[in-house]
Image 1: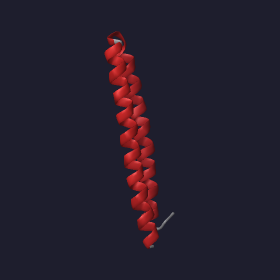
Image 2: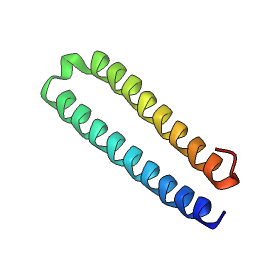
Image 3: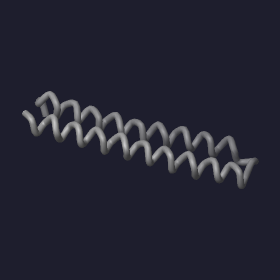
Image 4: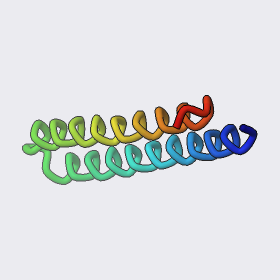
Length: 74
């Protein structure tokens, strides 16, 4: 049971770090492209929001797996 808590903690940390890095890189690239092409702000913003939602969905899935490992039902 102790290893379940350890793996859940490490997994949750990695999930949060990965999601943060992914969304940070996404937002940085989107803002840079908006600055280069102001006329394309609307499609870039839409694509950025969809991609951020997908990244968050994967992060939530990873956190659910970590919670399942922590409670020992996996």
